[in-house]
Image 1 (cartoon, rainbow, N blue to C red):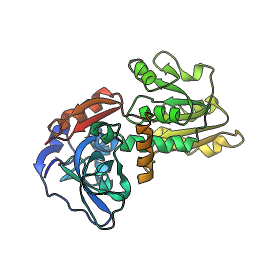
Image 2: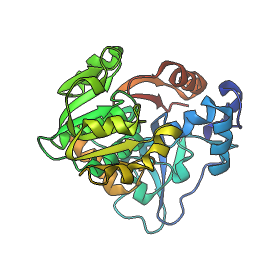
Image 3: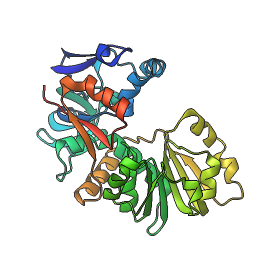
Length: 323
């Protein structure tokens, strides 16, 4: 089968090649999917954004000689023994086995990491939903958002943040989105009730406080977020810089006597079918929809990754997997 094969750490164009590799066969409780669409996640672009980080990721998740690609949407081609709830010909979306392999004509996936594709979404949209959607859903659930609560979302326009905005609204929150000037209109279109342009206004100086704060990558010290939280409030960090993540270690200490809770959702994939099914249900109810910045083809993979690294795209960058 045709695939975009990762050759190793190096410049983007030197580390990717179009090639022929063996078509996999599904084992027990696995499905083989003919890939129609995929998207770029941090699990791919981190291999190219920093040589050192790429080497660490390659040690943790070896990929040389294999296709990259975590998320996908496509058509079930074969099913392994014991698979339930899926059959050949079903349109599905989900996560590649081992978080590697979706940038190919066919991908293997564990049955618990695949769900029926939402009818309301195109394959490109569905293929851009799994990782960011599951991460955002995990953070929103960890925040325990209740209807009518004031929710601040820092980093509201990226591949995860734009899902957080929509999911927080779906769970009844009154959402204030924080983003740059060029993303204000996008955040409004996602359903945010209020938008703060961080290039023009500092969230610490608005005088407003919140019941829930979800920070994608965490741009401020924990002490700032603590002051922005109401009594009984919750703060959830998704990902983050090493400094932000190390600061979270002091979260329990900072919370003592404050009536406020601090938690991290640094890697909340929880790749289970029920999470994907929940996202699919919300998509078909019109409550969540991937925002696609660009759609590329497999032979443009290097160009797509360079775009993500250089331009900080809005929402997701997707692939139409036409080989």
